[in-house]
Length: 276
Image (cartoon, rainbow, N blue to C red; front, side, top):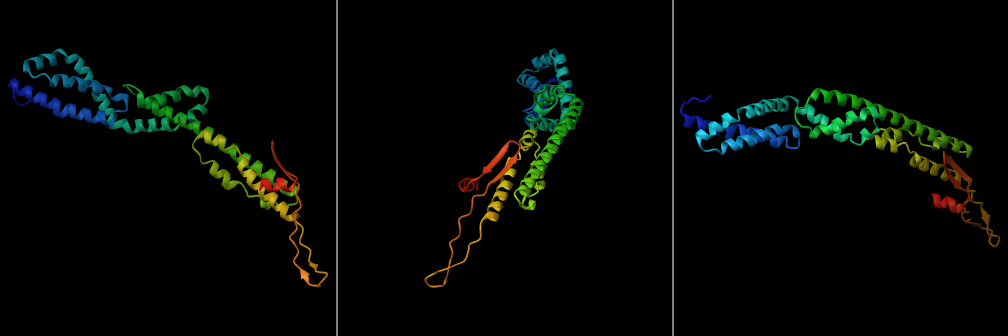
């Protein structure tokens, strides 16, 4: 309400209230949340306010406001809901939107019966008002739990794959007469591989080939060193003085490392040198 009963003063006060308070406050909130469609009711209100503010005749202004009071009342009621939502629920809304953005790739690994729910989370950012945030909070909890379960399965598989590879390498070491302690235990490797939050990355980390190749190369090098003969001291027959023997060429080491379908055949010196 306004203190003056003069129609001109009321008109001026109404125009100032619309222009400097309502439009200013609404536009600030719109700007802060411009990427979200739930803010559209405030855009409708600002559009209506701008139309009223441009009316410079007091009689026409009041007539227009009265004629559009029903439409304006509905817009104002909706704007109150949106403003309350921004004040009370915006942080939760943004958290769900961020969760959906971060897991767009991961959602493809969900069970089929949960993909529709995941699609709702992805669509939240562009959803029009009204938004019932509790539904999305519950959906996020359910989807998050399922994603964690999938990640857990892959992490267990990664651990098993590395432990299996380690056992194969140790057996290869024993078969070649080498100490299996030459093979580095894989705990540090698979622990790092399990840190990924991306399920696709976890799936790719099931591949232990890099670890296998590195440790197999150590065994091949150890085998070659073990099989290299010691140089034999000799004496120069003309002078009777010891001569410095040439370092003998290492014998080719036949060594085959296998892991599943991978076979490293090293049966000649050239093959060994090429591999190392």
